Image (cartoon, rainbow, N blue to C red; front, side, top):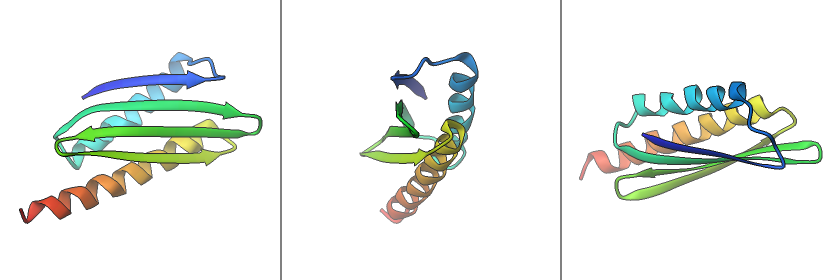
Length: 95
């Protein structure tokens, strides 16, 4: 899986980059056909945002999560994407 991580109004440090990489690499446990993932981390005053677009065969899945802590926003984003991938996989299993 190819992963692109970018930050807006945020310096991407190695711990944040490693945290995002380890969290989103767990998505491949549910669905192996993920081609690429684009992650954008944003800071707006007191709100930390994490948004991601996951490209799978036949669709693009998008999720956004906001929290006061960047790590909590990344956790929420991973949970949302996890649910979307499982739903997408179940939907296309019967075809």
